[in-house]
Length: 184
Image 1 (tube, one colour):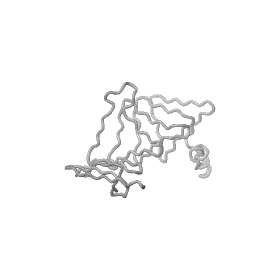
Image 2: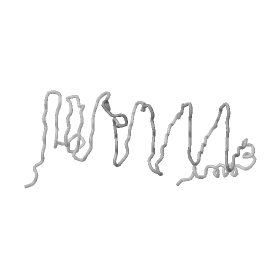
Image 3: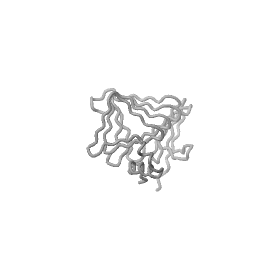
Image 4: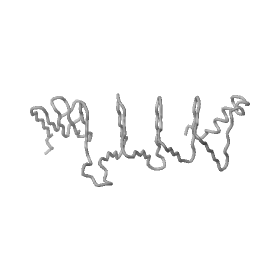
């Protein structure tokens, strides 16, 4: 005997509970509770979870945690995690904030159309290569400036670079930033 489709729908004063019915997007609801104002949550049979809250969604956790026990974990086994503030700021606060890209192929990219600022008493950058390319100007200012190079430590005023043709100058720039500019 084929299994009978299960459908549950219960309307109570102020809210509704559903299961086995179809939502506005055509998905079959596994379990959902919504208020008369349209706020609530929904689990679908295809494994999605949606939540609707008209104002602030506030969650407090970790009140009774032990010292090294995480208070909140958001883990995606596959796929991206997107945090989006469509008309506002995203502010991360904590005693320490770490951004970690895993394995040797991971990367951290910061893109800004206007301004990127790092403000800290000590700033450390460590890696194999450092490339800085500016379309207008680059300035470094300090009470003392030290540069060190084991194999080569060179600088030019730009006058030497300007003596050649435009092609020579472009080739010198391309050589300097060849790896960074490559299309790989």
